[in-house]
Image (tube, rainbow, N blue to C red; front, side, top):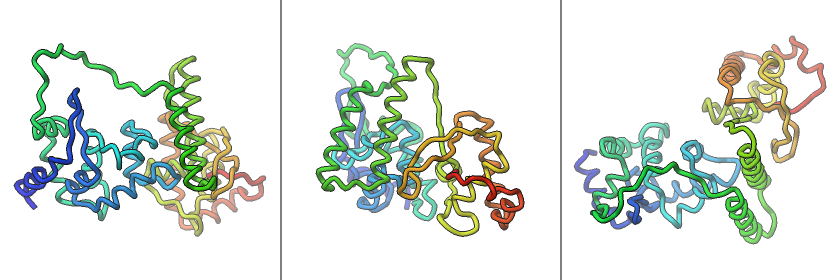
Length: 296
């Protein structure tokens, strides 16, 4: 694979790229998959995990880039925004493990100097009209909370109709969390602005550290939560009711937006997985003699 071959692929997919009046580009699922040298069906499956609790690492990356789960779900029909195309190419070029492709890396290199948006504008021959007034840079803004809640309600209604009212419990929890976050965001704007992230220790280990926390075995998720509560109680004692193994249960959540807490959780998790027998250490510390509480 060479840059010449990448250029040939780019020429083949240009008919599946669109540019709006303001110069923002979109590419189809098939065009994006072709650029990254991956299966388009597999890319669709990965993006669809945005609406359930099994969100892929790619979806996690896109959400951290500022895209919302409901928005990601609609890309198979509306096309993938240019900024998201760049993120997807970078993921399959450098972050996807065994699924990384040389072609995705070469595509990233080809776009590094000018950016994906400028590249899309160039191949589509888009130019800003000379008569257009110079646009002032604008700060990206999400739709109002009320509008986003309305969109969420419609999406839930559609899913309920498609599934006969039998939603996957993880998907149901995803929607509840999303609605709760929207309301919390609205309330925070009325008070002092803040950027808080409260995560359970398992969620932090998997989403932030890339760990796979098993459901059973010596290093299973129940013992991980107990490890943090036993040996690192200073990291916090806030509890919330969340979905655990399909059941709503109280768990401990931690202020991961605070650097000291994030560092402490990271240290605790690394020690847990490095220990040959966490259960023995917990038993010796008397952790199992206390009243049980889900701490994942």
